[in-house]
Image (cartoon, rainbow, N blue to C red; front, side):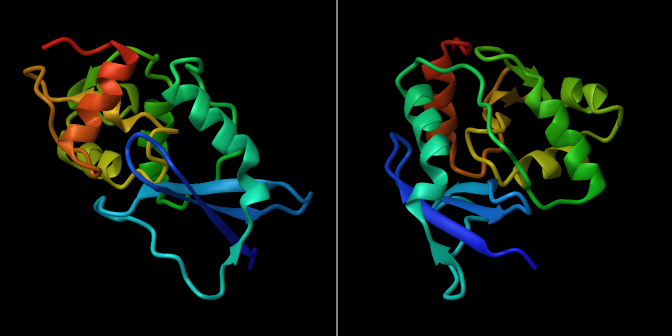
Length: 166
């Protein structure tokens, strides 16, 4: 089983915990980015290794994103999830910066039309806060709904991207 590495990073959303796993070629694949008080936040375990240098590129890209200088992340990702969740998460990855989609539109993009509630559950289980843009998914009436890190953070991310007007 691969070693889990972790670090923390300051952000406008609060302190982020980044986790990853070493790959066979010595790289680190990001498995999660969470903030402490979000639903499903990662809790650091004693057997994990603290290694800030392993996440230098992820931290650089996050800093650039929050500064408004980066629109797409280019990181090695390896989140854990079911095939269904991975399918929904892949559909999240193609939502353009500054855009929003509804849960219904996302279910269609993921090829699971009519499974809006299940898609909402997969979006809520997204372990890669900010990196995988679940904040870009809104209610069918344009309202902000369902964000594991809280609606204030969702609002802040959408405002940063200037893609949400209310």
